[in-house]
Image (cartoon, rainbow, N blue to C red):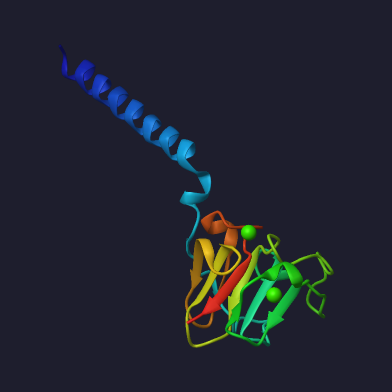
Amino acid sequence: MSRGKLSRRMATAAAVAAAGLALAGVATSPAAAAGGKVQGWKVSTSPYRCTGDVCLYYSPGAEGAIWAKTSFTDYNLSDNRFWSDQYGSAGSGQSVNDNAASQENNTAYTLYTYTGANMTGSVAWTPAWYGGNLGAVGMRNTVSSYEVR
Ligand SMILES: [Ca+2]
Ligand SMILES: [Ca+2]
């Protein structure tokens, strides 16, 4: 067998193995792949929108309607709604639960957001004084609770 044929065959085997792994991942749970570090910009970046400890936004990039809370926890976001301020209004009045596209952590600790209520499911974390887009870790429109610690 020529070197070319062998390397092609090995490449095919590797591709088949990779496809198998991808299928296995989908078969178990797509949500299992979600989560990770969300760090896109400093909260001090103009405009400095987040006046609470934690802010969630209807749109990516800290845009659209806002939900700000001065608290290190909220176990269930289904009783919370976005509101408009001078910087954005898209999504105003809608439930925060399973609806946030970006988040900002206006504290000196780490923000953890979860796909399930009561800090369950997949988690996205944002370092102190940073914001980021939840879609970057497959968690756009999934966040249901958060804690800062
Ligand atoms: Ca709540
Ligand atoms: Ca959820």
